[in-house]
Image (cartoon, rainbow, N blue to C red; front, top):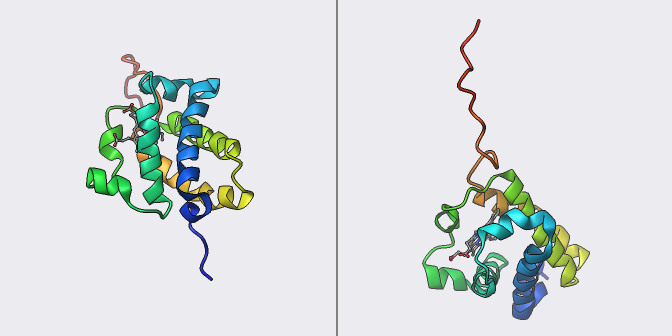
Length: 141
Ligand code: HEM
């Protein structure tokens, strides 16, 4: 028997619950305040979009692809500066969400590396803040 996909483990309702729990965690965790501030006040629509995305990404029907014609996340994230700090806040919310829906250790382990990879792919900046420039720096030596 072949291994189950995350979508098979969670099912349609489980993926929706994960996306809801994800944004609920983002909404309440003080450590995720910066990424929360990037989002609209009302999180209903983004919860639905994330569930749609994760469905295909986890091996279920490619619904996000069918709606958007692509699964590329670069364009929707281009308006935001996403550095390592924002990536890690996003991942923290995902860890919390997996905890909150009672995901098994097996599922958490299965998602660990791919979740980091997708979040790091969305990252579009080396640093979270622009580096301060010192106009007095001169070339020496
Ligand atoms: C790495 C840190 C990330 C940050 C800071 C971030 C932030 C955001 C923000 C601010 C939006 C726009 C929200 C809005 O329209 O109100 C967005 C949209 C979205 N994000 Fe992320 N995101 C991150 C990573 C990810 C990852 C890893 C995924 C998928 C696994 C993802 C999936 C989505 C989707 C599906 C949308 C909606 C795109 C659309 O309009 O079709 N994001 N994200």
